[in-house]
Image (tube, rainbow, N blue to C red):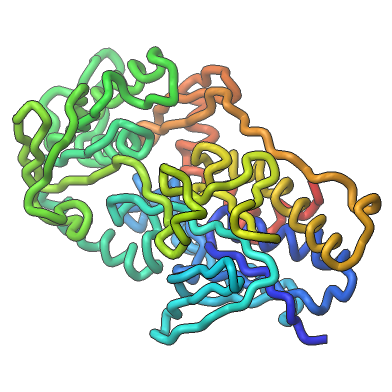
Length: 412
């Protein structure tokens, strides 16, 4: 039987790849006429990528094994029957949820329009700096890393905009790489070779963590020669596009109080923007994310069998561990919807599974290669635990199982 019912997943990162593996393992095989279904991943990048590793990976290819950092999506799905899975290398440009089609701009320059039977929006979010996320394909990221590394070789002043995890991690990695680390009995690094400055709009770093951890982060940053400027909002950067369109451009950063900072390199680490430019505004919330049912992960306004997961969706704050918590809920509800639509009685499919966001303090922030601050499930973690869990390789030790689908070998 030809695969006539396409389950289209937009996005090839944590949410999209996980959902595809889970459905192929635990949903499709149990549906009536299972050969009529096909899972289709549409991704701008041909490779899955460990995005949290960017603050260290951007400095040098020697920081990580590149084959582990970038993993081919099509190769990760060769384990499934060819008829049940398809990979589309392209970017969604228009979603028509009424006619249930999505238009794709393919990497080769052509255009394709896909009819979907079910749709998962998992397109994630983009960073202002092209150094810190897979905003395009792998070649685009590598091009920006190459330009950045050339500028880094001669840079004497670096300004990082933003005191969240990405900003702190970038500054910490650059500070240690360029300046080294102060001795055991020194509170800060004297006479750093390169001036690295974090400009933070808030009164403390790392707003998701308790003040004592934010203060500890500032102490660790001082030991690698990083200065923190707080209560200072950036109002403009010149020339226009410095740090965004051009990662190697010298820049003048103007603060709200009128002060200016000159930088050989400027890195905007001021949050992310959801990748929803292809979605009708009536499906979006006020923050630009897809308006998603916080319990079922359905996009109720979009009609039947439309879902969203990950940073692009409104059901929870952006965090990898919350995406992974959501996958079993999302896929159980997709499976139930498909069974009901195939004619199964409600009594035989059980009830909807519901998602509940874990709002406990959970965040780990490495600062250089040996230190870090963080908390898990509301409990403060010592520095060595942050290093052990995340700081060694920025989660690279975990994503192999994720991209291969082994993490979803059992239905949960």
